[in-house]
Amino acid sequence: MDDTSQLPRVTINLLRGCLVATIQLDLDRVVLGQFRKDLLARLASAGVKQVILDCSGIEVLDAEDFDALRRTVAMASLMGARSVLAGLQPGVVSALIDLDVDLDGLHAALSVDDAFRQLEAPTEVTEPPPDTGGEEEEPDGPPQ
Amino acid sequence: MVRRSEESRLPVGDEVELMQAVLHVGRLAQQAGFDQVGCAKLMTAVSELARNILKYAGRGTILTARLEGVGKSGIEVVAEDRGPGIADVEKALQDHFSTSGTLGLGLPGVRRMVDEFAIVSAPNQGTRVTTRKWLP
View 1 (cartoon, rainbow over the protein chains, first blue to last red):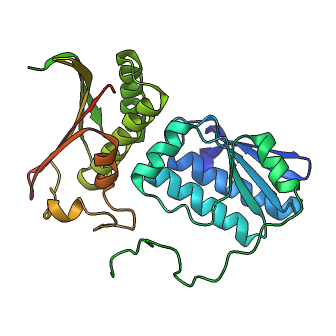
View 2 (view 1 turned 45 degrees about the vertical axis):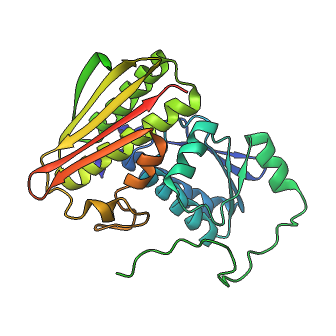
View 3 (view 1 turned 60 degrees about the horizontal axis):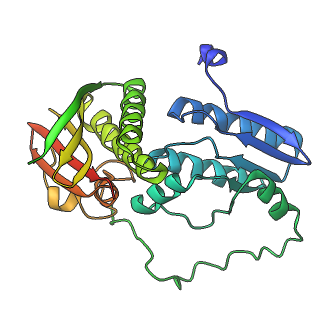
């Protein structure tokens, strides 16, 4: 807990009213955990409503890393902010599909510029419909 | 006949070693001629396998090799540990099955990312997952 200042951190910048986090490091749990704390603090203090996660530097994202990233997005949304994953590499995307991870409710963009365009566009983003189970093939975990 | 070369044995006992194994396979895959997508899949597969080792066995080994067969070449990745083993391999290969936490073993995902996949596991003796991916 005390030596977190020495660890690599995900850089978070405020750009055009939007927090841009550049995730160029190889993710590990500690870095991601710290990033989540930093992002929360910035969201709370800056009152920002939009987050772009620049993922273009990520070469590998396994299911656990992805889940952590997902939870970060969920957390930002509880802080009232909308997140866009920008610049995921084709190989990473392809592996995520093979891993069959849950992609529901995630917004993505080809690049950071594209993400800005998405966020600046008049919000024709409709609210996600209430979960009526209308989607085909909804993976359900086994009952615990 | 498949000829092996550049065989390596990589210990996996913590996150740093996991990352080293992932990066090693990335380099090997690139040298072997895999494209970016192929490299990413191999690296992700290793990450999943190594994470299982850490999570369930505590430590283990990733073995890697270049393969040259008749008219084909590729990479072999073997993950082995002397951990608790998997009681029901069949079940572990089903999507969304997990005994710890929510994410499961990721084995169905790994199987989709490679071309050949075999698993041997015995309770209290350990697990060995053998995967091969050929150049398209």
